[in-house]
Length: 182
Image 1 (tube, rainbow, N blue to C red):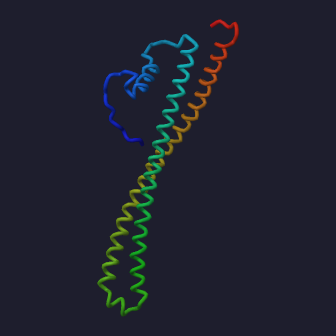
Image 2: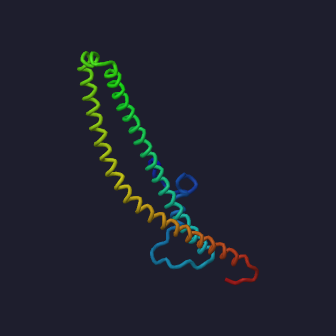
């Protein structure tokens, strides 16, 4: 997600304020309730383009959210990999001591107990983390169903945008058609 920035609020003068084009576009695209249907071909084109832009903005926000989720998952996977590496290192230390025979085990019993206790506590932490991941995965499955529904709506919106574009194109053809009266 992009970081929110604080913009200085000043006069809304399109020649001086760098964010004024956003304000101007909002003014142009805003239609008060009950404003009625567009009457001129240009207004019809503006309305169609406004619908297309709004749908594209919604898709952009969805993509940004998906990207943020992917980055979050990647970060989790890196942490999981580090945890597994730690568990492997502990088990390798234990195996190294044990592989040297009973005498080495007896002489390093305190170190082995410490390593086993550390391994046990790390495994307990890992188990709790995995349990949380299971719960999150179940929640994500539910969210995925909602995402699938959202994708279906986006597909319908894309089809609708195509109709708006075709309609705007037809209006332009009607405007430039010789001898046609609107």
